[in-house]
Length: 112
Length: 115
Image (cartoon, rainbow over the protein chains, first blue to last red):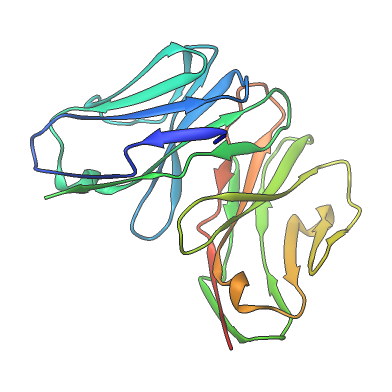
């Protein structure tokens, strides 16, 4: 049973389209994140949610809108996709305190 | 703001060699947590170890060992007798003690182990 699962694993779409990536965790964690990994492998935090509430938004364009219907789910919707949005997007969840984060398998988004 | 520096972009070794991956961090907080993650070619991020700032004991797990030195703000990772399966990108990360702190990652070190 996968702890943090993301769908889809691959997403190829044209510029200007709108797409969503779904994330679910079955670990009972309160905190969930979205990270973006660029072509140079750099992992950068995009959003942090705690118990369905947005805690951190790291200067991400407002074309990116996270939504957390409950604390087990954190979805990412992207409007008007641009070439520069091509990257791997990772969802993660984390328990309380100094716990490690558990990552989903990533979604490779390619905008053409 | 915190920062993690992994100065080695890429390291190539031959199987059975020992290799050390460097990690230097910056933070003004006195309580923080350090992590190492592995990203194999398949792409997933695999947790390897967590260390808190009050525990400077070195840790060994099989062929892996970690050396934490607060005096130099370093948390280095050594693989002994490297194997081809160790080929991956390795990330060092830092998190503060606050409840909502995220993990700040270094840029990663790509390790290539050839037979």
